[in-house]
Image (cartoon, rainbow, N blue to C red; front, side, top):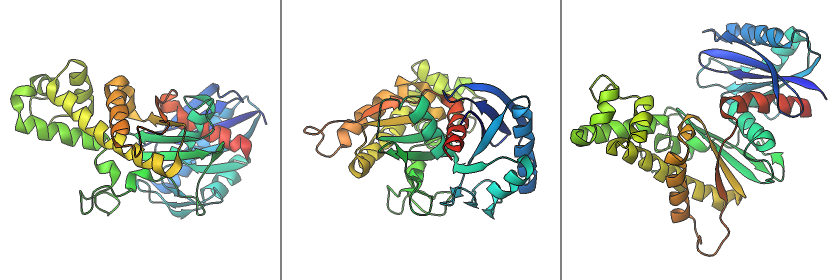
Length: 313
């Protein structure tokens, strides 16, 4: 199969891209993300048409945040869109006249990294995306593992603290409450409140108040050596690495790939994640260690991965 289109549904924009067999994006088209479920379907079709004009397109892959059924056709539940058993595949196919595959967006990003990014050369890879929340994907034996009902790898909702912090999913103590962009901001605010004398750089990047601290401020302050910002990243990394050690006990991959916005900080966060991973890995002194790698495709991973999954049918 030749050219396919990948679609990434974001909170503010929907991006469609024409992707070749080497994972190269040849053309893109973006449209604003509407506020209604039906409007989003319209926008997906508009983005596909805008990107695909002038190209011979053979299939479309859509990355959607939420639970996608085992047939890769229906969005069973989406946390940020009012989709409940939404037949997205059928709706888009009828409009664009091409075969459509729907995939969870974190799975699509994991597949993109495995095929064309940091996972190349590995048969068994676990990906996690540390952004506002925490998602992931499982590739074992060169295959994306989705589970019997299609909703595997919701790593962010593994409970790591019994009766811990309330999660948006309704449970308590979920991993993403301790290893995510939201958690990072919480750590920084707590530390800035406790030791404002160590948070001068961080506070100066915002409006001067603890409530004004944002993720971008923490990143910049950490790069400048601000103690509160650096320590906040270390706390996030401690939880992230411990979680990877648990996943190693489950899946025994040769590599973990860490993506998402938080991973953009590179070794500032990856080095302490690796340290925490080694600290908590059961039998770590006597067993091989999986590599902990930075994602390479950035925000393009989901689009490229969705397009490649569509190519494979």
